[in-house]
Length: 280
Image (cartoon, rainbow, N blue to C red):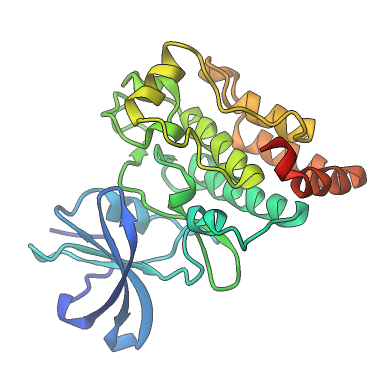
């Protein structure tokens, strides 16, 4: 089969420790021996379209793809290794505190990666599983999107199988309705909420119960009342029931730039972050 990417020999990979699980496979920190290079290797049961998706993408906020092992049963994807782990793990560590500048930097990097997928990539891609576990932090503290196992090329088919993770999923995805790229906007709102609160979305509630609450009851994550209104507004807009009312990532980037230019937002946000014990 003709592939548009480097075919890696399985024997050339030295597997070290497990570095986390993607939706569709386990990820290991590994050494790509011929290149003496530290990489992330995701073992797959089937070689799906994720390799095709990754092979056409190139952006500083998308995980870099090096190649794939296409010999069964050892299907693998080889990508850059992000030594600072997932955004989810980072936010769950109580020792890691973010300030206004860091939140804005990462919020922007994630939005830049998503805007690339929707607007600038050679093929338009809907990620469909954007969440903090699928954002990794590189050695130089840059956020990068990974795990394209659930992604769709736009124009392939718009009828979606159920993919994603309930607390981050838009109602139309939960209901397996046709989706547009704004299902990723919804998920982005949840990631922004995580950046601001360091909490786990819908913590302790079973997945199907979350689905019921979001779809049947119209529930949304609670935006803390002390949260700076500019951030609260972006989250609320991301969680509009009508997909076409949600902002595009280009619009989100514009909103983040406006927040960045507002000198007062710096102190307001840091004050909000410092008083977590009150609003938590």
